[in-house]
Length: 255
Image (tube, rainbow, N blue to C red):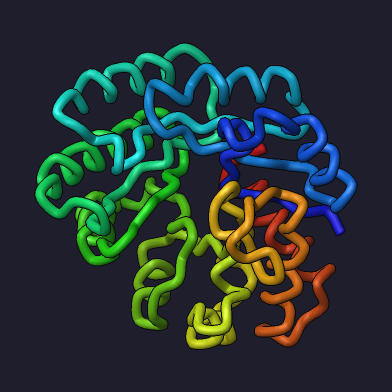
């Protein structure tokens, strides 16, 4: 199988001791393409260094994570905009809204997301959206801005069937990760009704490792476990899942 990990923090400090080995394991597992979401100004150097060292396998996004939307978020967004004007990136992201940790920053996060939506339009790039305890708030902003030019993915999707349907109506894709392998992950409630053309696979490493590695550091080499779980839920062969989701990623990120 040839797979694309559409969301992986392989540049993370957690991979500092064995990043080369982890990327080799990924390649051996068939994960030939890895898309890396940015967090904020502190992650850019490590992300771009990883991309420079593995240019055939790793591709960087540029954006501001909602959990990094602090009092100085305008300065962070100026940096995002500056980088987007300097060189090509795979997407604007990861961006979105996260109300799990702090609900008091909602207005600030909404403004930061709207700015990044505008940047995605300006640069004709997809959006990679983070929505934790904030699906409606995020989808409302995308819906208000959707003029037919926006595209992207709701990453790490684990919502309801109604929410999945709304994502598809918005013209976005669903990013399916390790949560789909969890006993009560909820993927069985929406995935069987979703056509393959709407799906991407991801690890979100080093977080959310799939079963049987749950609770340990995640890595791109575990992506086949997620592909097999999606295949099981859709009643298809893992090879078909790999081929379709890789094709979807190529179309979304325009490689």
